[in-house]
Amino acid sequence: MTDTIPSPGAADSSADSSADDDMISDALRKMVTPKGTRPSTSARRGSESSVAVATDRAQMTYSLPDRPEPPPIPNGWYSIASSDDLAAGDVVSVIAVGRELVLFRDEHGLAHVVNAHCPHLGAHLGGGTVVGDSIKCPYHGWRFGPDGACVDIPYSDARIPSKACTRTYTVCEQDGFVFFWYHVNDRSPAYEIPTVDAVSDAEWSRAYPWRFELVAALQEMAENNVDYAHLKYVHRRKYVPSDTSSFTTDGPFSTVIEALPDGTEFYRHAWGPGVAVLIVPDLMTVYTTTTPIDRRHCRLNWHFHFKGKVEQMASEMIEGVTGDYGLQADVPIWRDKIFLEHPLLVKADGNIAEFRRWYAQFYEA
Ligand code: FES
Ligand SMILES: [Fe+2]
Image (tube, rainbow, N blue to C red; front, side):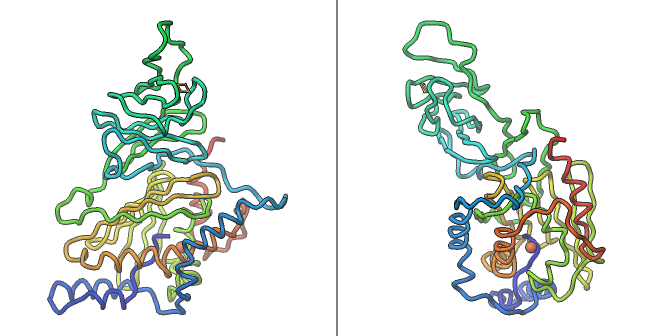
């Protein structure tokens, strides 16, 4: 997914003759994707139509009993919005982690995530309004506070029933994202998300958001980063970098380091199943958040940050990571593949087995 860098043409097209820009272009040239057959525009732009077609396909009702279910939704922190997209008083309906949720920002500026359906008669709180730190149901005006408990039934003098409570999710807002904690059995957060220096460092650009929805199981997308062989066959790298990449873990965190032949290194830090940061030192930091909509569909909300003059090439850099040689090349593979619990791996396949051992902690035993 985040494993490809802009093409040389992209870098050249934006470079001028200044010394700084030459330096940038040289650095980019060292990380180029090899030339290959470029998919046709219609196939490429098919990312959107592919999603539509794939979604249709996913909604068909053939009975294929031998097709395994994708893995369940892992426990972890997931982004639900970019902070800039949620003003005080906003109420947003979101389907994520297989659930209908409502996100709102209260009048004090705090973000909240609650189950969408009102415990009174089941109205959708996404049509509600913010009052102080509570959300007011659009149907009969019941209000629910930050802990989910009903604080007002405007037409009743009777005691508020103790069961008048909507489910809430723990929220964390940092580095430009609103995150919520998901646990299949409602346990408390098991880790914290680290902060990212580039987000607030004046030498780095603002966030350039990039969003996409696709047919893919979350684990399949994450596993892609340690599947070194596919870099050659899907992303058209010249070689399989199985002996120049490493995968290390630290509790709920993991890191993939890929070293190019000239010594340039990329880092991909994953913090649980839903958050990862790709760092190309001194050039680009991609804050990638991937949220399962359900077991077969994911929503990507990525923020690109560029250092100094690299920002001039923002669109080319984003295209390099997300375009034909990058994420778009993976899209049809993820859409159509099945998840094999016991794949046939050879040594040069990289760290897939190690990755799966690490990832197992995010599922309930
Ligand atoms: S359904 Fe929400 S107040 Fe009645
Ligand atoms: Fe990939």
